[in-house]
Amino acid sequence: MVEITINKFKDVDIRKLSDFIFGTRQASVFHDTSRTIVEIESALQELESDDNQIVMIASSDGEVLGVLRVYVGFPEMAFIDTWHPIIGQGVTDERIATELIQSCKMYIKEQGLNRLEALLSPINDQYSEARTQYRTWYESVDFHKATEETFMQVDLENLSLPSTQSVLPEGFLYDDIDNVVNEDIESPFFESFSNSKDRLFLDITKSQRIVSFNYWFSRQRPFHKASTLVMKDGEVIGFNVVRPDNESVEIGPVGVIPKYRRQGIMKAVLHESIRRLQEDGVKIAQLEADVSNEPAINLYKMFGFEQVHTQEYYAWKVE
Image (cartoon, rainbow, N blue to C red; front, side, top):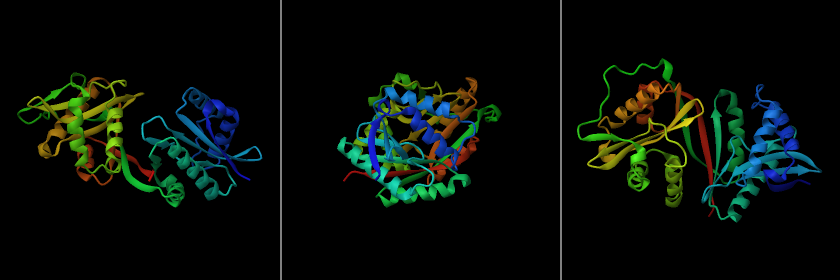
């Protein structure tokens, strides 16, 4: 008989869990010869102090059959870890996988949350079969595909910006994001994204959009100086958030309110942001864009961004 338990990491046998994850991953398409069991155990130990990290374990007679990790630290929303659940070799994959996902759905509903997301990333030729399997698992338990994105990056060390600086149209000015309070950014942000091709944003509720805004523009996490706001007549009409991420930076969210689109504003903003990044010695910049947003993708390609892989988000909404 299969038993599924819901645990915080401080309450589980980390060594046993590490052995299972290491052995299962190494025997699958997700194997990583550079990642040792010691590194996996150390990473799990770091989660012991975070009560928002939950691990669901399927077992039988003390033997681990599958695990699913979920983060519940946001208002309203919870997030399943990338390429989870992890199912043991030789186990009836679909039954254990769907039981774990169903248990996760019940848990987040009991916690008063109303959206559960799962990310499949990266998706490339190597992981195409796994992508099909995971898609089947999630769709069989009422998840829907919220969006597909392209993950892009550019090598800033070898990128040559045009010698003529791209400038904002007359009447528009840059401002430092630290000089403007979130209350003055919120309205243009929602206007921009509510009229965009960002299907993941459009798939969430109004209150969840506020949660997302507060996370993206949180002042508790450092902005890179390449972050920019575009102002006209003292009001925010565009934005580009850049965050440091180890030796690279992440760009996004990026947007401009509809009435000022197609005026070269975002082209100027990206030019200015990349100039600042290169000036600061940043080597790699990364971003994500909905695959349906061809104008944005074409703009990013103009600045040397290339697709690394795609990724898919699946979501379940509590009725």
